[in-house]
Image (cartoon, rainbow over all chains, first blue to last red; front, top):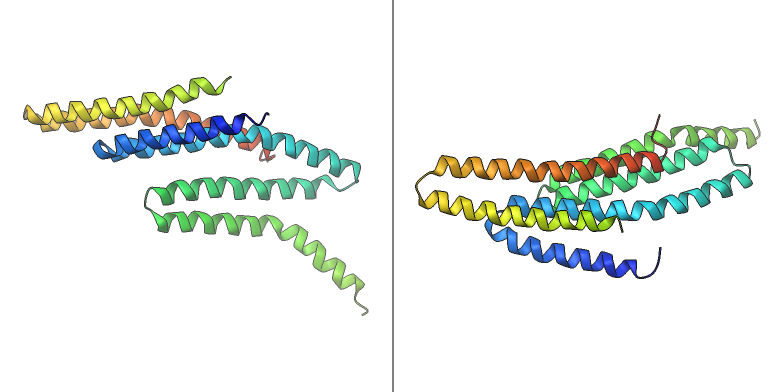
Length: 132
Length: 70
């Protein structure tokens, strides 16, 4: 990863935007497809970098003797947030704000459901600390 | 860089879109509206295939990176 890559990503975004403007006048469907494709391309490009960050987090967690289940849960939560955001933005761009809101709602609910084991553990610990 | 191939696909999609729009106009002026709609639909399916390929790739990678195996 070098700093020059941001130039490539910005250039890609600008070219895609021009193409979308040109195509949108004739066929809006194809313009939307270009938007989706460019979004997926940039995400695909970024996921390599995210992989490095996550490997660093995992090695830190194993050094600090954190249980792997918790790290895994946090990673899954980040993944859900990432992909729900991607989907919701594309759908909102296509003019379907209602569906986009539902995708975001689903993402939030799934994250809450994944966090339940950790929340239970915290509550149990707090209850243990309290004098009975 | 591996990205180059995928960037070409953006131009391909835009090209298909413009060509399909041209064909649509020509066929419409010839008075063959039903063919014009079919051309649009087939062009869209081809483009959709390209997009679905890259979306599938993205989802597989996300599944790998964020430990979604289970």
